[in-house]
Image (cartoon, rainbow, N blue to C red; front, side):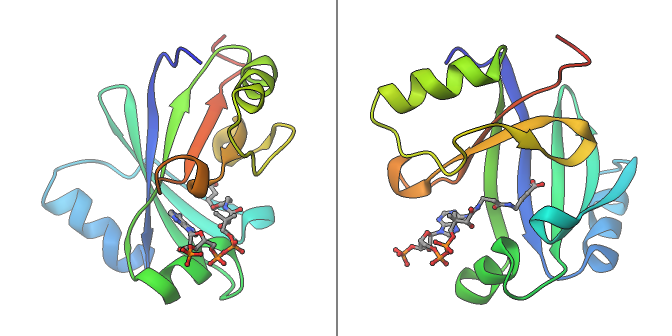
Length: 137
Ligand code: CMX
């Protein structure tokens, strides 16, 4: 797969309004964007740390992936996203290696990135995203 870097770490929180001040006041980071991703049933807030982002995820629907995660496990690290080049071919290559894919094809995520998820049962319990920013490649 040869990821170039960790693009972001997704953290499930009950409330963006409560979690954002923690990152701003304790870490001194600036929340530079808030975006709702309707398809994923989440509202996201972003902070930049070097070339990696922290993505806070608040569920907009208890039946969405983050709503279900919080109900089962509580708040915490939800997923890790690796930046790759040529996402579609990396996805095919990953599947050929026997990894279970959640997304057979890339779809659009927050900030216009092309994204695809690998199943946590295939990745030692870590929900793993691979993504590509076509504007940067
Ligand atoms: N990390 C690790 N394990 C997870 C997990 C996560 N984030 N979410 C679910 N699981 C585990 C559950 O604990 C459960 O394990 P057990 O069977 O051992 O109890 C198993 O996966 C199945 O979980 P579930 O609650 O029954 O939920 P589903 O199977 O319906 O969905 C998943 C799980 C990962 C397939 C689904 O959440 C998914 O498709 N996620 C990808 C999309 C997503 O998470 N979007 C939100 C962020 C989007 C963004 O960044 O913009």
